[in-house]
Length: 314
Length: 314
Image (cartoon, rainbow over all chains, first blue to last red; front, top):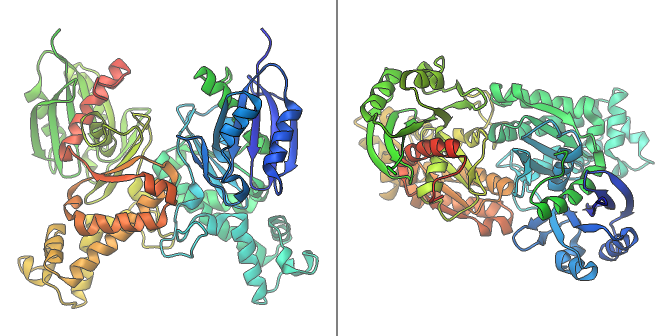
C-alpha cells in the first residue's frame, strides 16, 4: 500500500506555511511565505505546488476564532482579508478534496501530540507565545473541540482594555506586543537602558529579541519588562493548571527564546499560585517541533477526521 | 433482567447526601445528613441503610481536590477530617463493591448531563455557586477528567490573598463568602442598610438570603454587594467562554436564588467581555436537578466506569 499524505496548512498572522505530510507525521516537502498580502492566492498557489496523487485531504490551521460547526472563520484580527472567504468550501471546490479547519494553536497542540513534545502526555495545554497568545488543549490524547483562547482570559478584571473588548487579558501583559509597549513606555519616560542604542536609533523599533539580549547584558529596564511579562504569564498558567490539571504545559512561539528570564519567572509565579498538588504534577516544557507543529497538526486533522482515529504514533 | 442500582454520594462541605439511584438516573431512596461531625461514620451508616442486592457500585463526589489517578482526596478545606482517609479503599473493603471517586462539582455536572438541564448539550460548564465556587466540564457528552477548580482562577492578579495561596481568585469576589464579607465590611463602616435590622441584632450573622431579600426591598448596600459579586462572576464566565466555548453554562448552588440581580449582572458582564461569537452562542441557565445533581452524577460515575458507557439517557 502506498503511503498516504495530507496537505497541512498553518495560516498564522505573519507567515503562511504549507506542507506535504505523511500519515506518520513526517514532513515530505514544505513551503513558507509571508502572509501579509494576497494570502488566499498564495495559499492556492502553494497547495498547487505540493499537489500529487495520493493526498487524503487538506487541513487548515488559521490564526483566529474558528466556527467549528460551519467550518468558517468567525474573526481573524491579523488576517482580515480571509474573514469573508469560506475557506473550506473554496478549497474543497478547487482541489476536490476533503478540507478541515481548526485554530492555529489547536493544530499546533495536535502536532506536538502526534510527533513532538506532547507524545508522552495524555493531557496537556499548548501555549503559543508571540505577538499574541493562543492555546490548544489535549485531553486523553485528543484535541478538545474548544476555542482555547487562553490569551483572552482576563487576569485583571479592572485592567486595561484589550482590542478584543475585554479588560485585562493575559495577552495585554504577557505577549510580545505587551513587552514592546511596556519597554517603549519606559523609554519614553526617559528611563536609562541599553535599548536606547540598539534599535537603529528609534525606540519604536525595539523587538523582544533586543529586550532579551539587553537583559542578558544586565539591562535593568529589559529585565523588568521580561520579569513582569513572565509574572503575568505565570498567573495565566496557574489558572490553566487549576482548571485543567494538565500533566504538561508546552510552550512554543518566538518568546520562548527568552526562556531563562521570562519563562522561568512564569514557572515560579505559577508554582506560587496554583494548587500545590496540581502545580507539582505539571511539567512546563518547550515545544519540540517549533513552528512546524502547526503544519504537522493540520495534516493530522485530515487523517483523524477521515479515519476517526489518530496516526499510529499518537 | 432486574434493574441495576448504584449508591451515589455527595459529600459537600456542609451536607452529606447518599442515594440509591437506578441506571436510568432515577433516585429510589435518599438520605441527607449534616457533614459537620463524624462524617466518615455517617457515610458508612448511610450506605448501610441503603444497601441491597443489586448494587453495581458506589460513586463518591467529594468537595475538594481529587487525585484521580490514585482515587484519593488531595485536600478538602471544608472536610479536613477526611483528608487522611483512603475513602475508596475503605469503602471497597467494607462493602466489597467497586468504588469511584470524583470532585463534587464534577459529579454534579455529570448528573445534569444525565438527567438535568445539560441533557440537550454536548459541551457545557457547570458552576456551583455557594460558600465557594466549583466547576465541572462536559465535552462531547462526557465529563472531562480535570480538576475544574474554576473558583480558583485569578481574575485580579494583584488582588487580595485567597486561602488557597493564590491572589484574586474568582471565589474571593463572587461567592457567598465574598458577599457576606463585603456586606459586613460596609456595615462596619457604618453604611446605612436594612441589613442592620434583619440579622438578629448582629451584622455578623448576615446571610446571602438576607442580602437578596433586602436588595429586593431596594436596599442600596445589598444591591451593590450583589451587583459587584455578579460582575466578578461575569469576568469568570467570560474567561470560561473564551477558553472552553461551551454551548451552555449551567449554574447551581444556593446563590442562584439571587438570579434576578446577581446572575443577571454576571450575564451582562460576561456578554460585554467574551468574544461576541462565543458569547452569543452560549446559554446561561439554572440547573434543573438542584442539589440532587451530585448524587445522580456520583451514581452515574459507577455505571459509566463499569460499562465504559453512559446511561441510555445521556
